[in-house]
Image 1 (cartoon, rainbow, N blue to C red):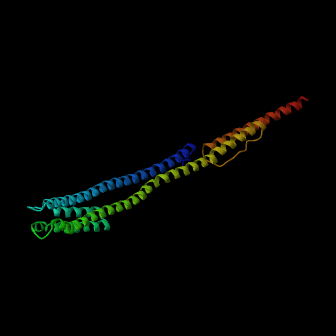
Image 2: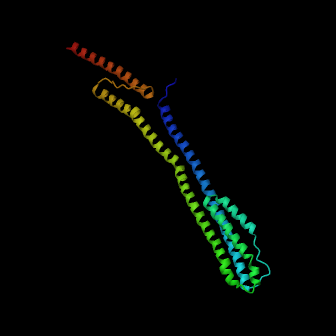
Image 3: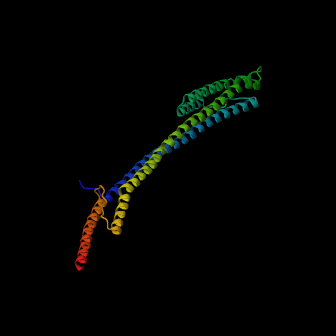
Length: 269
């Protein structure tokens, strides 16, 4: 198996850090897109639901106003037209859209309360024709309480929808923080790996280089043998072995030269 040199080890370390960051960033992006799509769908759905509630409230208000107009002029040919089936169907659509126990119960109450209001309004022609019933008194005693119940149910529906959205928003906050966790983990892992890489470089490269330089300085300054050794299998190990061999050969040569000089001096004497 081929040995991995300094360049290969450093490249492998950097590529490992890059791979961890890339994978974590991809997970973060996918989670964020998921949360972003959820938030977009939630906002769109909320707008539609509140628009449905507003239209139901406006239709009930308009019908009540038309009844008041008829009562005000105290004459009636036919009842004001109102599509009660469409109103009930829209209530059912709203209940399916909101799809929580509280909103379904309130929506059903709205349907029933408006139906009672609508049925009570069907007696208006008979009231107008009667000589014994005061139309305005009949409205305030019969129709207005039922209409108030309709409006109360609409207010409850709005409140229940807001409460549901508040619960969903809490879940959204949790999902949002969950989406950024991979990014935080990626940064933490990257910092840890950078520290490990720095520790690795200091232990296996910076410190041996310092020892090599110290040994070379001692060798050149004091003529001591270069004897620094360390375990390894990369270019730095080969460099140290080469320096050791050269220093050993040079030390032996210098010693021989010194011995020859000393012998020459003794012969000269």
